[in-house]
Amino acid sequence: MKPLIEKIILLAAALPLTVAIGNLFFLRPPPASTRARRVSVLIPARNEAATIRGAIEAILASRNVELELIVLDDHSTDGTGNIVREYTDTRVKIIASRPLPANWCGKNHACSQLAEAARYDILLFLDADVRIRADGIARLAEKLCSSPTLGMISGVPQQITIKWLEWSLIPIIHVLLMGYLPLFFDRGARTAFTAACGQLIMVDAKAYHAVGGHETIRNRLHDGMALAKAFRQGGHRTALIDATPISICRMYRRNHEVWSGFRKNATEGLATPVGLPIWTTLLATAHIVPFVCRSSPTLWLARLASLAFRALLAVKFRQNWRSVLLSPLGVALLLILQWQSFIAQKLGYPTQWRGRIYQGIHTT
Image (cartoon, rainbow, N blue to C red; front, side):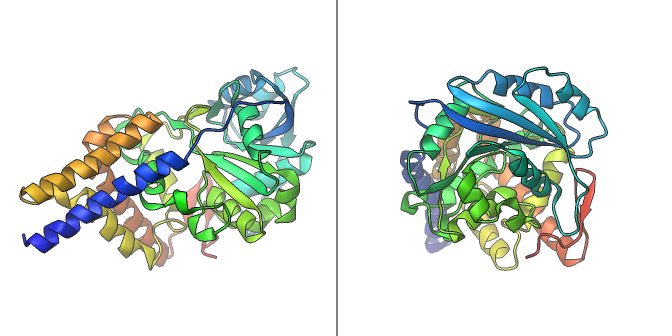
């Protein structure tokens, strides 16, 4: 291999490591709470019988916060609503979803109804598989209220990964956020630097309603990113925080769920006509090519840079170390998945999620 090409590979591998080092100084967990605030905790639940009880127990154990917990039963068929109704705690309320209108995604419709029912000025949208720690809600509220211009905060919980596709693909979330998005340049207002995670979102209710809430993003499957962009476009700052110390989540429990879940968001993420070739080049050159080419001192440095980047993320975000050792495999699987999603969209295949079929709903 020509020396120039080897140097390009080294630069590609060193780039995410360099960006991540800068980002990790910028990314902070929410601060300790100094006062109790009132928060409406909102959970959209569709067939969450296996997870909803754990979510409720964790929320009710919260400290230093006055809360109401509203669960929306989104036409569940597995007894999710009955589990919620077992709770006699006056803080817990359940509402039934209205029928899903045309051109709406299910989760956005659920969250919109939850926001309508909320009483307090701070809204926390949580997925049913997130387990918030006892001080987590108070700390999030402290962060949100730290600036009058901050309208939304979000973070990626610590991800529990057990099956092989979980620990191969799920840590890639932090690879993309930490390695390729220079958060240290961000001041919370430019849409180019928007980052968010739909699993855990806290918003100022006034700002949320001012930008149109989830109705503004009703046809978007990647709800976290879309909502954050709506806030920024509406003149409200958003912030990404390190949610690892305050929350945990096992996003999926079966390998096919991992694949389907990542495919669901692909065409609003990497798998765009312009973005996919660029991302394929960047990710493959940095994390796959150094490991499949004949060794040289320069390529060994590229391998070390790539693995050091993944090791840094594993330590910071408590990731499974198998995802570090088999990093090229995880990146290769991600790119295959993205291309599969892109081709399926071009061929007109609909997106299926939670028993619903979305045909072209997330293309705008």
